[in-house]
Amino acid sequence: MTGPESEESPVRRAVCPGSFDPITNGHLDIIARASRLYDEVYVAVMINQSKKGLFEIEERIDLIRTVTAEYGNVRVEAFHGLLVDFCKQRDIPAIVKGLRAVSDFDYELQMAQMNNGLSGVETLFVPTNPTYSFLSSSLVKEVAAWGGDVSHLVPAEVLTALTERLGKD
Ligand code: PNS
Image (spheres, rainbow, N blue to C red):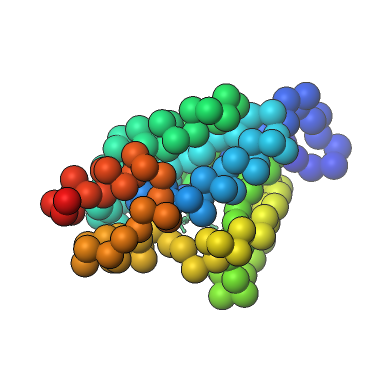
C-alpha cells in the first residue's frame, strides 16, 4: 500500500487517531492543521473495550463531527481493531499525531515503528501548540469533575456535554 513501488492514491489522505474522551482544543488544533495539509482527514475514534470512557463512542463521534464540521474535509469514524487495518481499508498512507512533550515521544515512537513495520504506514508528528502542551482528555475530566474551569481547554459543545455528564452548572 505505501511501499516505494506501490501506486500512490491521487487523493492525499491522513488519519488522526485517538480515544477522544472527549475531544479537546489540543486535538482540534492537530486535526485543523492536518486538514490544511491533506485532501481528506479521517478522525478515527479507536474503541478500547477494556477502557470505560466518560462518553459513549457515539457521543464522542457526534461531538467531533460538530466541532470539525467547518473544515469540510474531515470524516469521523469509530473503529474496533488495529489502526493499520483502519488505514489499509481506506487507503490511508499517513497517521498524524500531536507531540506535546518529550514524555510523549517514547511511546509514540514505539507505536509509529510498530505501525510502519506492520503495514508501511507512515506517522507524522506535529508539535503541539504550546498553549496546549499540558492538555489531555484525562486532565480535563479530572479538573471538570472537581468543578474547575476548563472552558478555555475544550470547544463550547464539549464543555456543555461535560457539564451535563458531570452534573455541574
Ligand atoms: O488518545 P489515545 O488513547 O492516546 O490514543 C491511542 C490510540 C487509540 C491512537 C492507540 O492506542 C491505537 O492506535 N489503538 C488502536 C489499536 C492499535 O492499533 N494498537 C497498536 C498500536 S502500535
